[in-house]
Image (tube, rainbow, N blue to C red; front, side):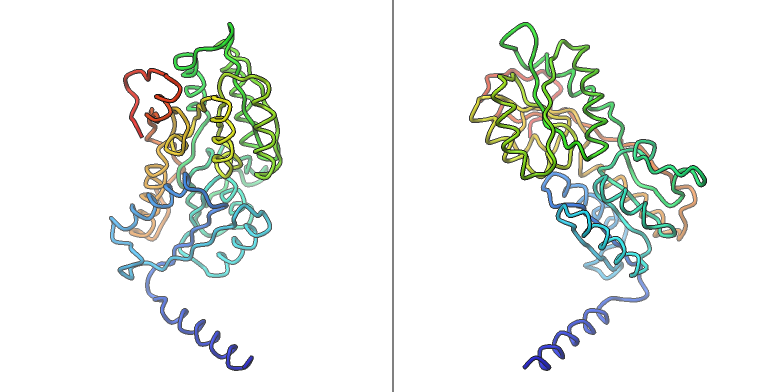
Length: 319
């Protein structure tokens, strides 16, 4: 029985290999974790490819997709596996996947999305400078500044100052950097920041409840992978205490945050995909360079605006 099973599995592997066309480009896509918000970027990325004639369904590209489900060792293993498959390029989402790829991949083009800019990734080598194989689209923290400054226009505090709570993953460099930036902008807008650290998604619910016990006026969902992965837990806790959630991530508004000014995840992926299309069409990365996000939106959740009796200014798009 065991021999029969082994033979069956071997047949499947051979069939799978044969089904891949060797004369078409191979696209490797690495997700660091599963999340409905950043999944829009992957959707946009492959839409850009398909609209330009590179579609797995039509057999014009081979696609290898892997998701590390938030596990760092698994992410490293996936990256090394992708290298062994010798793809035309590797696409990465979000920052964590990009950093892991840069640390391991030297000769294969990398197209990032839902990531910080090259300058903020802290991947510059003293000898070689910034990675020559890193392309795609990154983002600065400027949009976070705008998101925080929106809060006094929407939230009416219990006291003189608005008391804003947030949680951050102290092991994620981009989360720590974002917190530092948020504090500067908050101080300039008469907002008191109460921040508590978390180490993993499993800690978020308990830490959020502790934060809510400090009588905050608003919760701020900052750009943090742990926030993305645990947002529903945060939302449930905040709703129980009647505390609205503001965010810099437009994708979280459709999941229950009140409002945001931030990058459109689908367009972010699409923009990165167009760079990959250029490589696929020309066979070279000449003329391609890391770029900044082009599309940012002011969005709001009508259900949450009604729940908290908040009037949303003009210029916001309902989700």
